[in-house]
Image 1 (cartoon, helix red, strand yellow):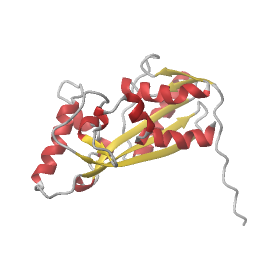
Image 2: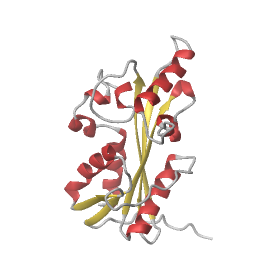
Image 3: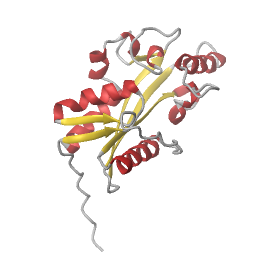
Length: 210
């Protein structure tokens, strides 16, 4: 029995691509990153595609199910991101449940509530506890025939309190990336785009599929 050669990564041709999210912040970041490669993006929200239930227990599983659902329903290639905040002292939480920590009783998301939950759990562990954390982004690129490619990026940093900055989204106001003194929410869109977990994952995608 001989070893099979590794399967070649499928290339992505210029054309229309679905950004499989209803998160306007993610749509803006991903559209900006893709625009220079001849890709015309349309969001799942614009196509009125439903948001699938994220039943996966890993970033890869959730990114894959979102990308496959959008590709199947639209008949177009689809790119999905599953990203999250992992806090070292909390055993990696909130992790894949990052968005869940922001959920309210009426079904909306309150990111100040989510950041407060993280801070309360850290504070309960004492003043000397490590505030090290990292963001992870897993991109899944799916085609209507079911083929999927995955790419992951991460950025190290630390949690701060109180939240600072009015830019960004999600946990950005409470996270300072390594080598910086500002939170992501204190950086301009261009500055954050230049070096974050999603841009790092995207760099791997670009190297592979374009």
